[in-house]
Length: 351
Image (tube, rainbow, N blue to C red):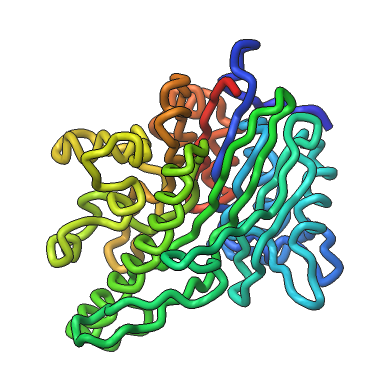
């Protein structure tokens, strides 16, 4: 099946399109044999069947037509299921160039972090690193979370995916895919309980960002090209608790340093940090039931090292209401709204 929906096609001067896309509960679109489900049963999306969501997700993937996609909330990998097999089945069904899947440390949340890539354009391997300052992401990181002079154990429920990527031209770069902890006070019984849970969750989320940042710093000091992407469940000025801790997790991951060689860059995060009262780019759209309205938030990023930024890459958020091309293509617009509560972010770069 050839793509009929692709927008913003890459010019011949742009050799690669990298994307990050959080597909809400992607795993529910596959059966226990990793086969794609397209029936009239309900998906995890409100008032959306599995057939509707599967077709919409396929249309979105065909529209962005990326060489490399970091899939957040990818299908489950467990003793009885294979997330990579499910993704490759999905890619084959919709005729995607990005047809090879890679999953790193599997987790028990049924929401994996996976890489779907075009094997004719790049080769990719799971290449986790470790050091005294930043152990493997499936291990335990210790730091004092509550200022009681005792170190607490920090773990990733969804360990970041570390990828060594080699392009057809022989260039190598590091990719890290992340899905950091939500700060939402799930299970709160009252307002005070919600505040307590929110503060505890933010501590854990910031600790994960510090751990991730330690690994990033090691790569940058080694002179390695790196792109860090995914759903960070956070952003500059996103909530009131940021004032309590002085900075957002995204700012920690980007790097707060006077040395520009150790800082990552994302234009959407940069826009919010430098113009906090200006128009805010957004990558997700959630329905707030008790307020009967939709909430837009900037949660998804592609952060790049200085050498990659110097190549003048082009970022794009595929927001159906903010992007004219998406809005003017009803098929793409409807697919984006049906597929997930997040929208893809793409990066076109000459590698």
